[in-house]
Length: 385
Image 1 (tube, rainbow, N blue to C red):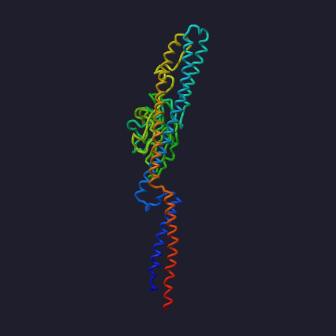
Image 2: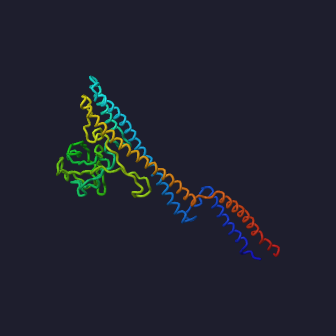
Image 3: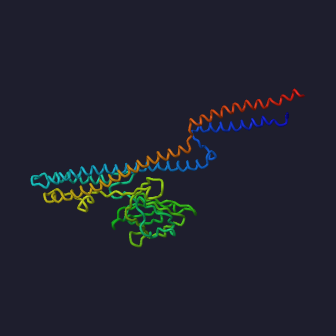
């Protein structure tokens, strides 16, 4: 019988500590709902769970992207349906005007046709989504074409952002006011001047090393990032072949991310056609003239061309909507299945864990009782003394 080391008490304390740790771990799992709360619970399971969670989060955003792309197409298709109604009405007017019985009503018929032409133009320019016009042939992406002149790194240019600029256009430095730090850039499309914008670049001339500034030509959809090497003397002005300039290429497809990877299988790209009346009529004159019987008969062909072209483009939009609907359904299934997989790995089985907790709780209580008994046992030595 010894009093220096109570082996029974030490053993009971060790068992009590183990049971307490097990009970606390069960409490943590029951309160959080997760089987894995720290990497030490299951290192491999934690790694797999993190990958699943990342994919699930990305898939949810991809699903929203697909939904927004669908909404965009539905907005454009809704506008197309109204243009279709207008063209049908114009076909009625042209048919009426092509007949000799129209008589003196031709001027009234032509006036209505002219008004309907204007409404088609208004619908085309008015139909927008997220600030981008959809039906004027500008919806898509643009990129730099060729090598810019003057707009190079040696002249302090870090980047030229033309994502929102017009396609197939050239942008010139048409004026440089060095006294007031003003720069004017002019856009030319098809050889014709379209628009220009002047901005103050004062901040760009006071940049320190490693600083940069963005010159935002918002009217042109152009952003130019410059650094401390920027100097107005490096640029020549004027809309000529030798002026400082850069150009954009043909309109490309707008890309929608409907997957989790940087791959074509996770992306969907499309652009929307120009539906102005001249393009609808396959290059025919945009003017629907119903002022005479002869011109009205010609207009019948023009309107038929427009209706056929619109039907084709509207069908393309419908096919894209159907494709996006299938993509969105597939994303929903993927989210559901990956969530189930992540749940199997990380979520706790509440019934099983409650059983473990009850067992641990009883063991803790019995361990405490036995520790108390082990601590009392050495007192029997008093009887010997």
